[in-house]
Image (cartoon, rainbow, N blue to C red; front, top):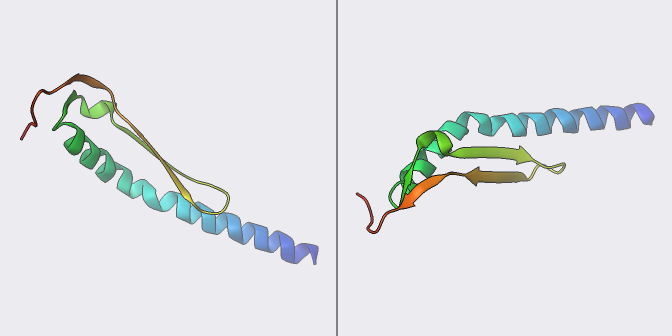
Length: 78
């Protein structure tokens, strides 16, 4: 019985690890898209845009995004 529980726990960890790693390849795309959207309203350095994707114990994604702006544009930039 204990062996089955250990095996189940290991499988859950492997599956969650796969789920955590999957978004890593989209972080660059998200950073670019966020920069494009924010740069219409703010003077922003692309390197200041940060995206973090984490997965909790049940596999739900937690997204954290931040950026530093130097100023707000008075008009929408095209």
